[in-house]
Every structure is written in C-alpha cells, then in structure tokens.
Image 1 (cartoon, helix red, strand yellow):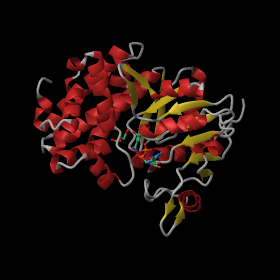
Image 2 (cartoon, protein in one colour):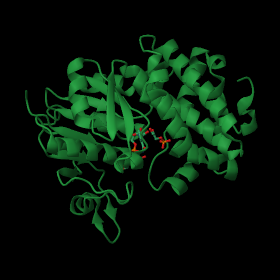
Image 3 (cartoon, helix red, strand yellow):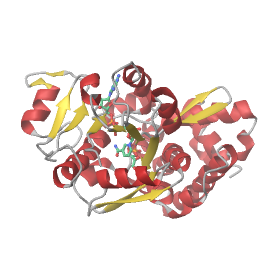
Image 4 (cartoon, protein in one colour):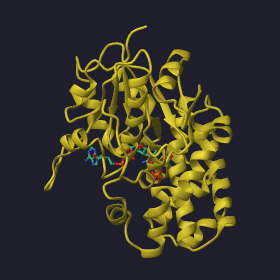
Length: 345
Ligand code: NAD
Ligand code: 13P
C-alpha cells in the first residue's frame, strides 16, 4: 500500500508521549515515512530560545516529560499547516478547550491530504444546550475524514518511560484498526482495537469527573474503602450515561477494556484531576489557581467536563439519574460541602 505519514497535533505531556511511540514505530516499521512531525505552540523560553528549536536540538520536551529522550526522527514544527502537509495519519491530542481553532485551521482548503484519517486522544466532550458530541464525531464533521478514538490507563510520563500498559482504540473499520495499531502498538504499549468509537471517547471524558470525586475523598482523608465505592458508583454512572445517550455503544467498553475501568483506576490514583481535587478540599483554593500552581502548564480536563455534563443533564431533566456527576459539579462550582458527596448515592 501507500506510505503513511504521521502528524501529531499537540505537544503537551500526552501529545509528546504518543509522538515518541509513533516516531519509534515509523522509524522501524515498513510502510511509514520515518519523519513524524509534531505541532508545537511556539514560545520563547527565557534564556534558552524558541521551544521548537530546543526540542529539535535536545530531543527532549523537559517541561512535560523530564528525562525522556525523543527519537531523532520526531520533528517539532510551529506551523500547523506544515505539520499537516501530506500527512495521512493525524493524531489529535490538544487539551479539549483548545481544539476549535485547530480544527478551523485544518479545515481550510488544501491543508489536509485527501486520503487523510484521524484519531482523537482528547479526553472531553462538547455540549451545546441539550446536545452532546464526542470529539471523533466533531472531527469527522469538521474535517470530513474518518476519526477513531484512543484511550486507556495511560499516565503520560509512565508511558514515556516505557512502563508496561495497555490502551484501547475505537475504530470505525478494520482498515483503520490495522493502521492505528501499527502506529502505536509496541511491547510496553499494547493496543487493543474495538469498534466502539463513542464509548472509548466518552469513557475518557467521564472518568475525569469520577477522578475528581476520588480526589475529594483523598482531600477528606478517607481511605481505600470509600475510594473504591466512589469508583464503583462512578463506573456505573459512566456506563449508564453512555448507554442512555449513545445507545449504540457497548457496556463492555467500560467493564472489559483499558479505556473503561483501567483508565478510571489509574487516573483516580495517579492523575492530575485527582491531585487538584484533593488540594481543592485541603486548601480551599480555586481550580484555576491550583492548575496554575500544581501542574506547571499542564491542563485540567475534569473541571470543565463536570460543568458540561451537569448542564447537559440539567437540560435533559436527567440529573437525578447521575447523583455522583451532579455532586462533583455542586462541590466544584456551588460551594457544596465535600461531605455531601455521599448523600443519595
Ligand atoms: P497538557 O495537559 O500537558 O497541556 C499542555 C498543552 O496545552 C501544551 O501543549 C500547551 O502548549 C497547550 N496549551 C496551553 N495553552 C494553550 C492555548 N491557549 N492554546 C493552545 N494550546 C495551549 O496536555 P496533554 O496531557 O497532552 O493533554 C492533551 C489531551 O490528552 C487532554 O484531553 C488529556 O486529557 C488527554 N490525556 C492526557 C494524558 C496525560 O497523562 N497527560 C493521558 C491520556 C490522555
Ligand atoms: P489526568 O488528566 O487526570 O492526569 O488523567 C490522565 C489520563 O487520562 C490517564 O489515562
């Protein structure tokens, strides 16, 4: 078949970790152009120079992945159109709030190759009134190309350090499954394709809301029994929500796959949403302040998702079906006492 050219759109901690794996595979496997480009939002690092030049000369993106060496065939590029040029495989991995301007640029005539396809590693949803959309759906509509979803128990730094883990790809066709499997599968990053694109994407968004509840539990100084109860109840709400509003998706995505239960577990112990939610209870500071103080430029996704899911459920008159999602919103946005988390669960 044709030679595939990979472009990574995003260069935060997860974008850079996925770029590293894709570039290692592109250098080694047949059928790939070895040069993998990664879109970097250009900035001047005081005393050091331009971020793209630093990444390309040191082969590190030390702000997000300290001590991780990047393959030399991975090239940081600041111009989005240049990153996308001739790319047949686009990996979309920007924090969800920054996607709209990226899609505007990519959808301009002549920017994308006609045979391009995409995968979203973004964890979030878009809500408009009583409508909810997954990112693969939004990307397909806006770019007119097929879009898959990637999600799993994947804390970026652990993946970048080649600690064994698994991920799930939701793919619309067997051809896409084979292609994306070839891009990402490696001995320490096992890729399992399934058909449920919406389920993989939604699970990645909804688990961030449950991870905030897990952080509230930690912030209140409660133990493993309580956290396990919150994770169980949260997993049921995640699966019920998906069944109710995306009926063609599969409950197995939540119970059997890395994108479901495994991602929920790792995020609720080692993730950024958990960490900031714990500090929210302990310090009383705002999430914006805590993101700034604790994450060093990385971005929280769960706070915005809790807000979006709450307003969607309210617009549908369905809040009573999802008491955990509702409480996470009320604690985060309305000053509800975190101890109320357990009422009516
Ligand atoms: P990150 O949280 O490390 O965020 C930093 C990125 O945001 C940088 O590339 C920065 O340039 C960019 N950014 C900051 N302000 C911006 C702006 N105004 N406009 C455009 N870009 C801006 O990023 P990440 O962890 O790579 O997250 C991307 C997606 O991947 C998220 O949806 C996240 O939930 C998901 N994800 C993350 C992990 C992880 O462990 N980090 C794992 C799986 C999935
Ligand atoms: P956090 O954004 O909470 O760190 O979660 C990362 C993640 O999605 C792990 O799979």
